[in-house]
Length: 178
Image 1: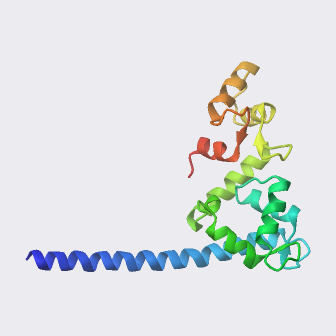
Image 2: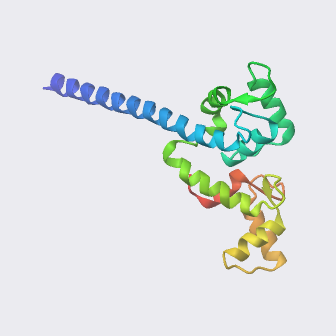
Image 3: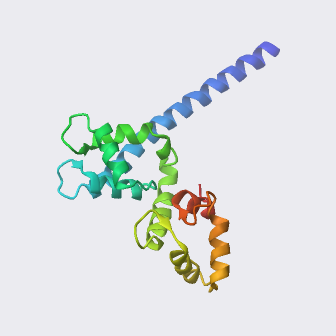
């Protein structure tokens, strides 16, 4: 009886592994379709690749703000054919193997899209952070009129790395969606 139980347990474990593996393959295919549609949105001239400005905006929409200097370095790293731009194949290989993008599984993509849109709405100057004046607008839109002291205290609670602003990761932690 113990042997039979063990065999059943082993068969069940293999079935779970098989289902998980199939789900992962489907997720990879779904991810590629989703990322390709986003990539094409930023390929403004339909050339099949993105330049520095387009890649920066693309990464921002995927929830990862990069400074122009970081994007320039990324392009040098990613641009395998040395044409000064990144094609979809080069981008997707980086995207699916980069820890920064692991949170973008198909079932989380919709929430991420909404989080990015919300963050960008309040990141008025486009620097990848929300400062106290931008945070004031966020609070106001949520119906919380606050004085300067309350704004500073509220921002400080969200500012995990204590740099005086809210970055996208801190914003996502506050949302609690991921």
